[in-house]
Length: 456
Ligand code: ADP
Ligand code: MG
Image (cartoon, rainbow, N blue to C red; front, side, top):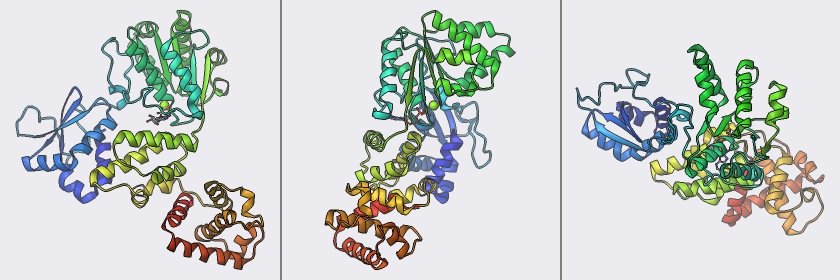
């Protein structure tokens, strides 16, 4: 985790600053929700605290959700808090004794139940922080229902499925958090992968009975990313038995996977059949509206003002998964905090250069026409129609202008795509739009936004 934080910081502050200040940091002990970082001198400590303190806390919290605060101390030689500290310069491996493990393992564990299979839930993933929209409202409703009344007829098992980064894990943690808040239930959450490793470890240490008993003693068992069990026949078998035992005993099961039960070929038929017996809820790909809502919610929570134009830009550019969208926004926010500069479209392009590039593709005239038509609310067919009303003609000119700017098509080629117009018409459109952009700042901004959205 520390190494990841270091590399993030390095990316954010640049090599020189990083080497000057941040390589001097050593890891100190973790105490509850606080990690201590050690610096060799008081001056360095004060400097790092004032310049990077908040950012360090944020990064730690992102990596290890249980850590809420970072304490900076001067490491005195021979100080008992210091000995395991290490300088990154000298040794790139973090001190394992003091380094918290991966976030999945270290979320706040619940005091109610002690056994090591109980849920370690990420406290950021709650129903409150889940933004609901058309693509996920059904899955959300099912998850809420299960959290309110586990083991209801028709909802057991609850099978959540959908693509990467669409909120399956978030919903499962939210179910767990809600259940625990309501009290007196034991909840076990683990990825299918971890389930397998636990199972194998139990076999090795000849403690499979205990493992089974532990699992079968919980009220709610949640297994994330079940597709991992494909091809792992023994683990599947074990899961199947656990599953049956729990359902027969009236306990709730929640499972997630990247496909529906019927599409999870490679899972045993009898398991697939049972998985499909309760409620199967699909999380669909996000829509533009949902992406905007998610960005708005996250920006608001961060306290940094992010202009609507920037949010729209991100929601247009990063369509694949919420995790990436969130990552991009977090980076913007971190930058704004770190450098105290307002977030602008230009800054966004700059800061997110690499992310945006990964989402680039070669833009086609058809795409330009579609996006421009959508933006100005005209029909796509009007891109090639003979209508000359301003409301139609202006967007058409913008589309031609963008086609000239963003593609390598010649003027006659562009003309042909716009209802067989002459190349001089295209030329006129291009110069007219350029002229308007100079006179009308709002119009220029609109066109710029379009360009950024389409740009490759
Ligand atoms: P999955 O398990 O389906 O791959 P996750 O649940 O891990 O996806 O979600 C990825 C990231 O996106 C998480 O940080 C999660 O909080 C966030 N996320 C996904 N969907 C939503 C949503 N509807 N509202 C808020 N955050 C979301
Ligand atoms: Mg997941």
